[in-house]
Image (cartoon, rainbow, N blue to C red; front, side, top):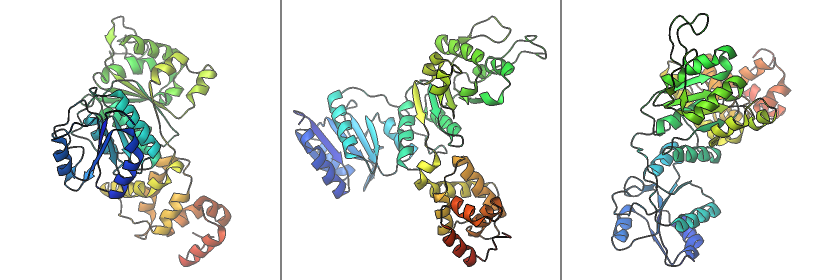
Length: 418
């Protein structure tokens, strides 16, 4: 028991409230539980808790939005619990300066550890962010692996630190970079992206830092680089693992001094940007092989964000499909519905191209399918890709061959001529 400490729980689900009470009862001298904002406010009128644990959706309002006006001392630590599990919730929790945000269903050991740390920290002001305008920013999914991403993005909102986004191709690294920008301190500034793998190595420094007239053949006038274009905002360096070593040296110097000069120029210019980098490569291997500077890696890797592959968040596939159908419809594509069997096939697939591949498949099926419900179109597409090989088609669809044969018969599909 933490001597003389008081915890207030605001949770309207009696079962969850009971479990938390039984788990945390020995962590404090007084544990109080209420089920609504009105009960919370009445309790707070006579007590001063050392920690508040609150749900978001309560019978009489929003547990986050209503807290700042409830007479709680600003230095009181708050732990937010939520079944909404979106980036919006995580950022709004950070907006009130919460100590931690735990998505439901939460791990009791993690909750206990967070409570102990918050009580040990005591009453200290917490960093807050302006979270009045926020949404999903294109990030779809509630799988546990995505919750970790949301929590990291929310915690980054009050900082200006460099970020390194790691993940396989197609996992949505630029979407995350844009979300970091949109929820951060520099959201009113520009977001400028450059793909290191798409720029010829001899032009990378000019692209990044700009060049003066006559700096090289073809430089007929001065040109601003990406650092200058992103001034006051965020510079996103995609595929940073493909950056040539000579350019890495100059980038490191900029990150160390916050100054740079254009190619062919001598004047020192201020680098007023937040740098967010991303790569699908294994950076530590590149460092070990001498292909990436170790000191630059540590400069960029201040806050790492690891994106899960789609095969590790299959529970999000249905929501992603609905998102791609909706965005396709807004772009003029036919409205489609995926049959339950078709959705099961999508959820079983390993998706080596990740979210990007799923989006392409959904939009392709929306165009090519004659039926409003898209299971037959999916089977035909896979059969065409494997040239009628039912064994391989069944493997790709995540079902056995007999099940595939049965479905083809029901859908009146000739595997030889899909």
